[in-house]
Image (cartoon, rainbow, N blue to C red):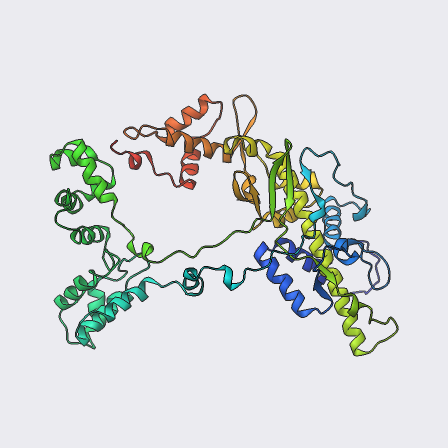
Length: 503
């Protein structure tokens, strides 16, 4: 094959380390960003936290920082956006990132751009400000169900053989308090090492089932509820009737077939209502209630509030400290010096500049996206979920002149604090369905309508999916029955036969 030289013109997007850093910072959550900033402060001596309010060129406008050769460079995300648009359009002319039109000054939603690099976070509370009673809860690890059962086992007088059987039963109990192995399997695993009978395993099981919380180490829901009922005092009202329903009519109770239960139990509706109230007081998953859930706090990235009749968008001033470049170390850098110390300072200075530019670009992008979301979803802020408008990533990408992938990164694990609660930015995006008038209705609004209709339904005769479809059609919303069923499942609303109950 003959070798030859050819000249070819093409475009290629190069992912430089600085661009990768900007993309990584953009998709980080608030807590991850704080860890990233702390790590940068610990590893880069040129970065420091500004303790005063006097803004420096490094802290106030990192996009104006010059590179080592004295020339100004565009922000990393702006370069990525320009490359992505040119790559998508196929145009050979490159558009300068710095020449894009900025957002108009008379937006219907006010935006405060002074907080692009937030002020220093609030100081941590010292030990004297914490109540002493809260010390244990803040410093102790949560105890698992297994730990609680083992602690109760250590206080129980059992023989060595029975204790080994009890340990096997506890090990076979899941976090809900239910046995994941049958007694036969537990017996087979112990029979080779211990000379025991199957009846001894059953006897130890009944002993362990007396542990707290009531209903643990049970084989199924029926046994779980019966164990809890058996531990109630004999003087408990309607106790015998509740045991009879659990023992004989659990399937009718699950399907809400109250007519069969009334006929077979020979009870009146008022009496059955009292019995059901006792049954509903039981815990079908006692293991979950025994272990306290770990609380995960959400730190909002932006705040939205209404001031003087206008919705104002502000960055959370506590998500990151105000950073700047250490002027003392920067003054030690000499241009013509190539020593190891000078090279180390120059490299860290460049990394600090890029980090500040990436952080500035992240905050600027987040503000643009949040502002456009609030501008589009003002009806939701005014009237609630039923007024939510359809919105997709492409709509915001066109409004802020960015790529959809950038919008996706900017809205993932980012939260907005509004007067109606704290929502992830992804929450404001939803698909749409057509209306009879030719308009569009968002899926979020439809789910809110379904929730409202179910909340107002007659418990004796719940609304079926077909009935909900007809009610929405009367309001001009065309939704298929299977779509209603899908939205109902996402709202954790059971079918109509399971929602039927006595008033």
